[in-house]
Image (cartoon, rainbow, N blue to C red):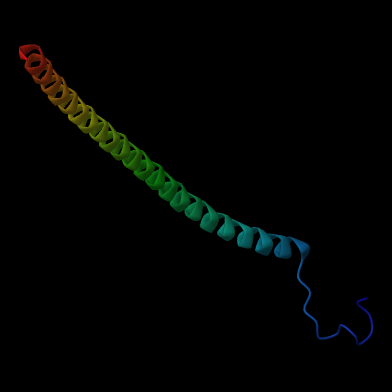
Length: 94
């Protein structure tokens, strides 16, 4: 392998040097990945907080609509009752 002219101009590194270079590349990639993970975790938390806010707002509006409907229904029932009482009293007067 090292004899002859085939690899004469090649530069060979020690395995420990190659290992250290690879380790450095992996360390740098790990730092970048950890940073990206922190960013994604923050984004995930932001999305979850937004979901909670939207859900709470939806529940509040739904309750508001439900109360409004109940109020309208109560008013309609009261009007109907009053009209029926008036009609019954008129009928008994006849």
